[in-house]
Image 1 (tube, rainbow, N blue to C red):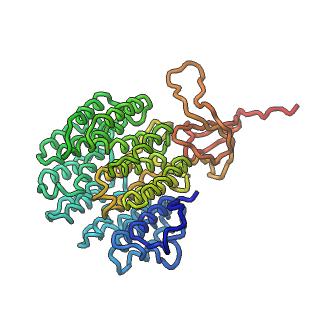
Image 2: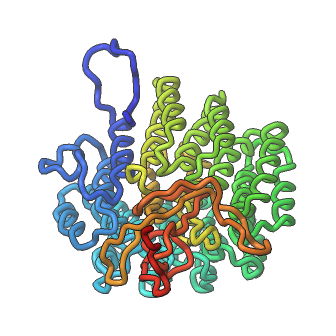
Image 3: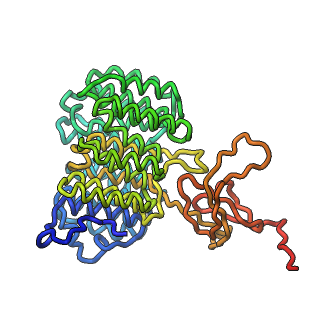
Length: 544
């Protein structure tokens, strides 16, 4: 598939001009498509000319894309990234620092390379290095709750400095803390962030990135329901308009995936007011509806109906968040109806709404190689060929669609849709909340926040191995998962199955079961890498 798929017209007039924005988007497409692949055409070649086809923050993202290409391969990856850590260019150094963080995303390593290499930059003076180091630590230690890392980042938030640069560092540190302590209700971190929100000047809180402080606070209480109540009361005392946004965000994160109907009604109440400005909290409420109802099918369908009403009757700030909320309900699950809806919204006259719809298409189809979405994105890239912001969004969506060459998923729900991964959900929320103000975050200089998505990346293969971890191909049946709770007898757990030999790819809604009697799986859930042992009671059928 031609992922670039830009203009099909041959008379574009002379040579193609290299634009920084187009090169930046190619960097991200390359980073996502080759995620974990270990080699690519742009960055792992010898002469590194691609780095210098970007400028400033673009160089940072380009150097950081090495981390994504070498994802999870810490030993070899560090040797390739190391040379960039000593570059004379500040931005390349920052990118390399971020790459070290991305590389170790979700990997537990006794040597702690990420902490060793990044801690010096957090205490250093360089602004760019600080931002990169905060983000890198947030990605590397997501969900680990490591104390030495949180203590390091808390010092950034507590620093006395003020001004836009200090606020940016502080916000990124807050987001990283939220990711590291996701769902752990860490009081120390929570009180530090709330105190910062209370004491910061109005100018600081008007900063485009102050929202990440609120998101960091919300992530601390992800899925913890009423444990967030005390913090919620504290947040409500903030007088600045961001207080409302933080309160809604905290409330929705706390009830994430709970399907709590009363909370959904509360969020719809927020959306009922007709505000044309200062409506950030409404957008957060819309994303919140998707966040609360994700995880179970009935609630999700009811939410879809509410979104129709919101699109009909509400003001623009609310409409702009609807595609993002649709995305959170269908991560890596390109449902026909949802793609249809997003495709309609992607042609909306309001640029922010259409950009959000395009990004949402990327999230919904992430890692599926869905040919229908690929076709729609190709059409969009021609339709918007004159609009730089839209073209960037289309390219990012194409990168997500073909993520990991179609072998990855961003879906945070695993183990037969029973458990939710905190860091993965946090990563998706980071992406979606960045989209609420895309002009000042992803389309401006903070595009490197897209790399948070690596925390949600997960291979979607089912690989079966013997107890000594040697390869063991067996036949499995893969089909649509069926809800069997509370049914009598031995109901079928999958429907419409096909029989394959492992390794196989599993979709979001699919489930696998072993197709032969001769082996037993050690785990009850067939996902990822599964250990098999021989069935002692198996008797091969007699040949007649």
